[in-house]
Length: 277
Image (cartoon, rainbow, N blue to C red; front, side, top):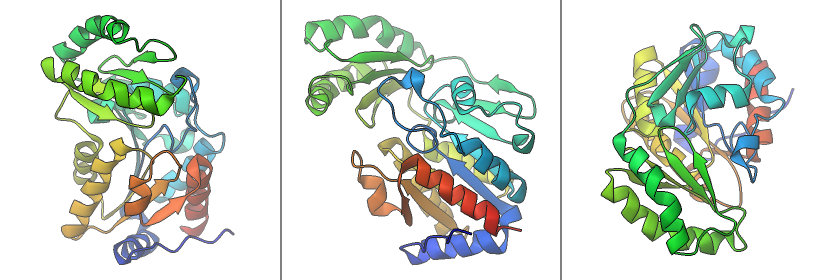
């Protein structure tokens, strides 16, 4: 049996101890891209690590709840993750678009409010804006339904393209009542008022979890980290896991446990499943 990592902080050690002592009260929450699925140049080709579903299937029956919290549409994350119809994941919840959408394995359906009108306006303006500033080469627009994302990973100089677009896209988002969410060589324009922290807090309080584990890899996961800190201050133990990469270091600096990308996350899930009764 693989050894569990020793958390770097006392709150993290308390969170892991609470999980091991009382797993049936625990919520396990995870980001998708970069955490359960490796980052790829084309987001449409992203798929969960091949061992992710088996690891989650082994762990899910031993804890109170498992939730995937992602900026993707919930249905897309379910499809790319291979989560539907898995017997051991019959209580899995996928909170898409930062919690604006919810897919429940029990019903197999997605529930969501009406889309923000600013997304359609941004979608219409974005190609012209990129053309005017000469940012088309290697830059790719991802249509996300309730959000729009601009990727620079395939540009000649991905970091330079990212920084050049950040200001103009912030202005575009602001004009239409949206916010700009930076990530790993991606800039996402989406509605305000929802983030992974809000989604996580709502899920934990709805389920009445007694402890929480959150794993993420990118800047969009920082609100979820803050939510775990808030829960800790309220007496609910928590463990922060970073799916480590060289592209984003902010999470590793705050995490209790840092693992080596999605493979490391899957290994941790598998080890937890083996340790829990």
